[in-house]
Image (cartoon, rainbow, N blue to C red; front, side):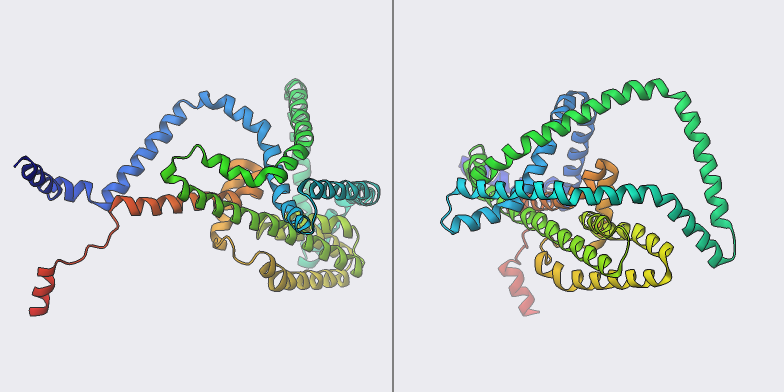
Length: 396
C-alpha cells in the first residue's frame, strides 16, 4: 500500500506544473546552468588574488611545458619509426638528440651568420626603403600626401619620445632592470629544462594517459580515455602539420626569392615560414616587407616576386596543406580569424600561435561533456507517441 502511494506521489510530481515547466524544460535548464556558470566566474573574479601564486608558477613552468610538448609531437614519430627499425627506445632518442645537436652546430656556424648580416643590412636600409616607397606612391598618385604624413608622424614621434623619456627615466631604469632579469631567468629555465622534459616525454609519454586515469572514477575512465585520445590526435596532427607546412613555405620562398635575385632572400623566407604558423593573417603580414623591398628595387622585381608568391600559394593550397594538414580540426576560417584576434588580445603572441590548438582541445571537452549530458539528463530524448494516440491517428 505504501509503495503504491509513493508511486502515485512520484507520478503526480512528475506530471505536476513545476516539473513540466521548470525541471523538464530545456530552455530553463540551459538558463539555470548558464546562471551557475556566471556566478562561479564572478566569485572567482572576486577572489582572484588567491590565484596569484598559481599564475606565477604557470608563468615559470608553462613555457618549458609548451615547448616540450611541441618537440614531443614533432619528434615522437621519428623515435617510433626508429624503434620499428630494431632500435631500442633510449638509443632512438639519443640518435634523434644527436641529430638535433648537429643541426644546431651547422646552423650556428653557417646559417646564423648569413641571417645576422642580412638582418643588420635590412634594419640599416629600412628607413631608405620606406622613404623611397612613400616617394613612389606620391609620384604614382600625383600628390605629396604620403610624404607630408610621414614627416608629421616623424615629428610627433620624436617629440613624444623625448617627453616620454624625460618623464619616466627612473621608472624605466628601475623597472627595466627587474623585467630584464625576470625575462632572462625564464628564458634560462626554459632552455635548461626543455631538453630533459622532452627526453622523459619521448621515453614515458605513452604512460601519461594511464597515470592520469588513475585519479578518475572507474565509471568515467572509458569516456575520459576517449577524450584524451581525441585531444592527443587533434593536437599532434595540428602541431606536426603546421610545423611541416611552415618549413615547406619558408623553403619555397627562400628558393623562389633566390632564383629571382631578391635581396635578403634567406631572412624573408624564414620570416614567411615563421609567420605561416599564424593561419590566414600570418601569410599576409609576411608579404608586406617582401613587396616593399621589391617595389623599391624595380617594377620587374615586383612582378617576379608576385609570381613567386602566386606559385607558393598554389603549391601550398593545392598540394602541401591538403596532404599534410587536411581538415583535421574542422574549424571554419571565420572562426579561426575571430579566435586569433581574441587570443592575441588576451595572451599576446603565444595566444596567436597556440590559440587554435587550445580551442580544439576545449571544443573536444565541451562536445564530449554535452554528449554525456544528453545521455544522462533525459532532456533530449525524442518522446514516442503513445499507442492510444497512434490508434486515434490511424482511425482519423
